[in-house]
Image (cartoon, rainbow, N blue to C red; front, side):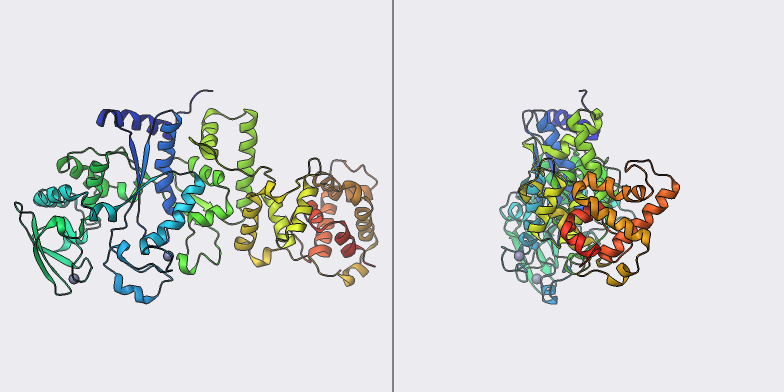
Length: 545
Ligand SMILES: [Zn+2]
Ligand SMILES: [Zn+2]
């Protein structure tokens, strides 16, 4: 099969070539950066998925590749995320790693938000080398780079003003009057970054600063002062330090005058490195929500929320099938079932060898990593069928197993684990994302009034169903029977092709059944609903007594 020529394949080839040209003999590096300043939202997953797909493609092709995840945990706390008490206000201005953990089970505030993302990355097969910027800065790893940046502060200031436009976000340090200093201390007295640098001695490397809290510090060797480089300087410094070969970023970083433009000038003119291969990726939105997303999540889902609904390979596929410049929307609403169907069709075609090379490459990247296949549901029954089963049984495992057995009559599933994790995804979706009005409430007792008022032909159709039901007790056969009842009533064969009149009769018959079973005009597919209820319950609702 011909190799795919798409953005992943091309970028991976470039990473190998550029990595070797820039740093011969070294493992090339792809980079992601995340600020653990609150719940890491699903929108941020593209920041990880994009370099992952490229790094993993390099590895699939037999060469090593490093994917680093830079945690910006030494950034200041800018605002307290929704759902946390106001008492956290006092930590604004401190490094994220220096703010207490909101739940008491983590080392600090930053770790509290890192942990859920780590679990999701693990489930998605995204292997990263984590780099804590707190550890890097406080261990003195960057001291030489900080001193270099401070000595070249006039040049850096000139670069920043060269690219400054009205529309560009200005670093806070740039707004301060007087000389520009690219280093922002965390005040030794109050721990916040409300400090203003008042001097730096290029020879002794001693720094002095004052702070809003009243502290006057220094001269102190800068190596002994807590603090970090301003963001626009910090980023190119790290490209050079980590020998980053490829680092994408959201399109907002890729526009003219943005961090990419400024970074390119700084990494070459100041830090003696090269601009990584890069491009901007478009925004990933979401639609359909759950109650738990509002409140503490600030209304947006996290990767963990998505993994509750989507099997990991399917979630990877939703990203892998798009080009980076394509924005897209992750659906948590009624579309979920259709997305699963599309994924299943792709899997079937892949197994049959019926996919174009481009689609096949995307399927392989979604369903496996260079380490091998990701865990998949052994018996992937249709998502919407499992969702109906979960809905109708209210999640009762005994009832669900009975239904799943009936659904697989030819080769019965004998343990629900065979349909997991998809069953759990379907259940989580029904519980969290299906509006209560759309949930199925099976009648607890027969609709006696309606049954007593059935017209003769209605009674006849109900009786036909009850008469043949036992012989047609599988998903396919019940489908034939349910559609066939109006045909039998007209003396037609059960598999006769429907005409317009028959279609009208079928619709009226379906509404009657839904009314008698669940008290609504629509619901889950009728064969699924019948299987879910079981013959005894169907009989008791349609022909009580
Ligand atoms: Zn915590
Ligand atoms: Zn202070």
